[in-house]
Image 1 (tube, rainbow, N blue to C red):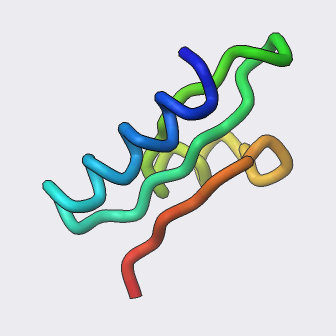
Image 2: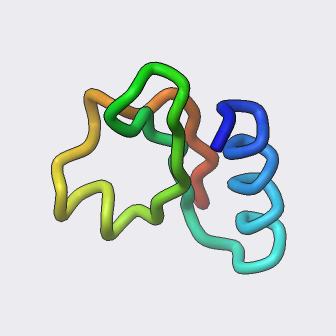
Length: 56
């Protein structure tokens, strides 16, 4: 999905679920996906994060 669509989706999921979400760059330069905090930590995706919206 595009970067902007992934960011918008992460914002919507955050509002609906009150959980942390991250947009990460998937394998190609124009391919992005939304992951939750558990998946980000489990798969060690910190270096691929391009946007985050987190719960305090």
